[in-house]
Length: 249
Image 1 (cartoon, one colour):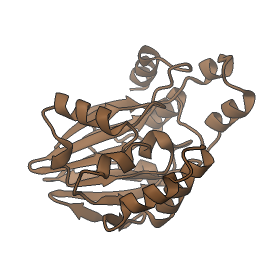
Image 2: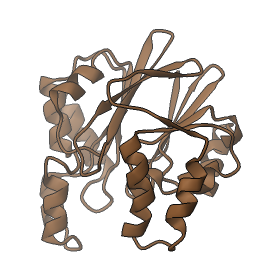
Image 3: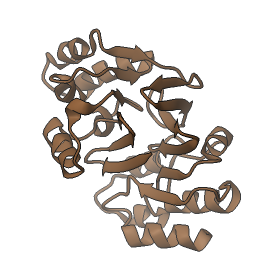
């Protein structure tokens, strides 16, 4: 199984999973045009997608969905609560007044509802959604299994639960959030205190230090590939995230 991070961060999140003839997109936070461009760089075409999974309703994970699916024939998988929140999210962020209707129409006859803990299959890949704590209505992480190989994607969550630790056991590769350095976040001048508190909360975003603690206490050591994702541009940097994780290992 091949896992490719098309985009990660507040500007848009999307991960492509490929197993033989099966292609699945986890989240559609990039624009449709950018998704197609980045897939093309990998020799892939959005028209080949067998399904799109949406973890939660926030714009950096679902903002490109409506336009992306307009010309595609694949189903969209999300929970019933996430569907309602996705439609209503456009009202909250002040997008065009007809956007809720357009989002609802885009999902018509293509939505497949999923629930935490209930496994499902797309083509040759078996998926297992699990709940992760974030300030969204029903946020999921996913494990994906093909040919006995399991990988996981888990982003946008404030702390590592026992369930998350269990779901990540036995994975060959893990894409996990490492959003910020706690010390760097506290000194970012552009962020109001309320935003910093939200990010640091148990329903916010995982820090480099949180990842290190998990690597020390909860990681089973089986994953050969660990991808640190959703790095903040202002409160983190790739070197710091990497060295913090490597020190824990």
